[in-house]
View 1: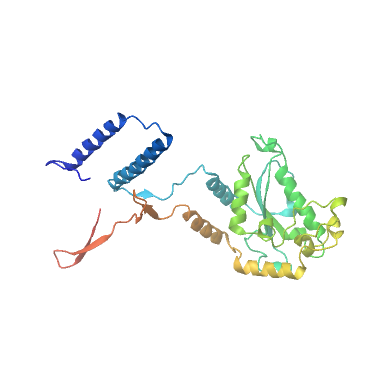
View 2 (view 1 turned 135 degrees about the horizontal axis):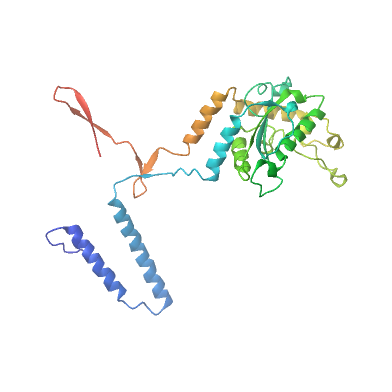
Length: 313
């Protein structure tokens, strides 16, 4: 049905007609049958959607495709993770007991041949977290010594692998954080570095295993214990999860696919690149069509015969 538009402002007249139709609709008695009411509601909803689209087309201002939220867990995890990497490296063997929970990274700097591409770089071989002993802890003392205890546990396990590893060939970085932030930071560090000892990589996992009971001796030996024998309980297992040759091959392929970061500057560059992915450069119109935030330039002649750019807004 076409509407007769009188002379004057056609837009204002259309709005008046629409208001009159809404008033008329409000005075209509809804159908008594459920099916008829549902059908009417569906039809009206479709028209409301069309009306919203029409209203949107009147708004020329672009909408960003994302909104940076500093309080989002993923954002917090990135900040805590980067702060962790900014900390000083400490020899694993030199740590004294300290209070606090948080996140940490282990670094290898020894001669073990399978880690030759990794040794001496800024690429962690393992990333982890230590939760506070008290989940309601508000300061480092009430968090207990969980972070130190976790690093000490790793040191003891590494020290048992005397045929392949030396505890003095490991450094660590750690950050004591407010309770609740350690998980997001750990997840980000694992996704960012993809350390070969972390379970998520499914390569040389098993450092964090605490042993098998007498009822689970049929379990297979972890790849970490296969490559680094020495833990007594692991020696009692009868079968490897995968052979040493496969573990070595997977390590080599992974380190070629994910080249280790050799400097902190390289880490920062990749971090900034990753952070940029949080704010895509695209915008959308009110109709959800992609658009550039930069106006197009139209070239025109200048009075002196040159060419000037005028911007379309």
